[in-house]
Image 1 (spheres, rainbow, N blue to C red):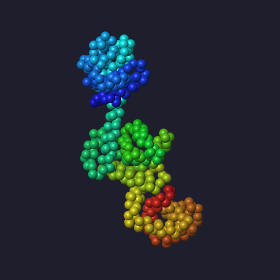
Image 2: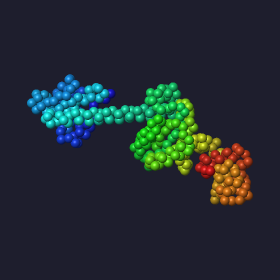
Image 3: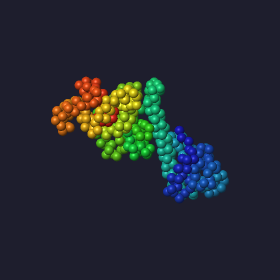
Image 4: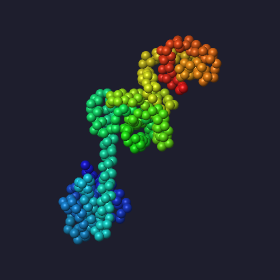
Amino acid sequence: MIELDTSLAQYIVDRAMAILPHNLNVMDTQGMIIGSGDPARLHTRHEGAQLVLANQRVVEIDAQAAGCLQGVRAGVNLPLMHEGRLIGVLGITGDPEQVRPLAELLRMTAEMLVEQRVSHAERQWHNQQQETWLTHLLDDGYSLGRLQTDTEHLRLALTWPRQASLLSITQAAADSPAAQAQLTMQMRERHPQHAVLPLGTNAVLWLRSPMSAAADHTWLEQADRRKWPVQRLHTAEPVSSLSDLREACQALLVLRDFADDLALPQRCLALEDYRLAALLHRQRESWTVQQLLEPLERLRRADSQSVLLDTLGVWLAHGGSTQLSASQLGIHRNTLRYRLERIARLSGLDLNRADHRTQLTLSMMLQAELPSR
């Protein structure tokens, strides 16, 4: 339900008078002029409008009749309706014979402007409710029962299974709030069956049907062609409940921070590939993580040219394959073995032990030094 206010009334007047050579007045349900092309008539009572309100019909007033009414000039006054309810009166000043052909057109235009305002207000309300829902989704203290009720109330598209995805926006777009809003709107138009929600000022949460990694890369290419300001796409595994969805979204935020802090070049990041590294990165200042990184730090201090670090990274990325690693590095396998022995001696770790290799792999991932295969 909408009530005419001075802002909307004057907006209707200004839009109409930009193309018509007649004064317009908009009156509220009390017959007070709340929008007019003649500022002197604002906030005065219009008896012609009161006749319209009392009878809910068009009232034409000629010059003679106008002289008998307070605050009235010759013209045509029409009821303004919204969803079958009388919300005000529109008046056009002039000889009724001359302005009558314009009156119905103006009323239709005014009622369309009212409907646009109502639709905009409803969208704003719905967007605010969705943002509140997202805040509650990420808040462990908000009960899942209440969250489920909110989800049903908002009619969010959350059929299961559902895959949480997080879009990081480019820095240039992040500096413009309108860019995020436009991206959100475009994605909702493109994916009406999914829930698309703005997150902060530089991200968009996309709760979608499960997609493959290949489909994600294709989607990014399409986004680039549409000139959408997407910097990176982070994805979690599909889930089948609100509780798992909450944890997946929280984990994506950790993954996003990890990727941003290390400036990872990859544009498509799957949580399953970085879960442990992202969690450890979150605790990077702790004593435990510092101890984890210490063997790699010893190696770095002794490897001024980064030859050993590069070798280790390639070897780990190839799962310890001597042949593939030597081929990529362009060295003999014996040279590779010699370097690996030096790495083991300097780091103090046994490269034949799976847990030590895992420690080095995580250490290099935490410092973005592990190359992609």
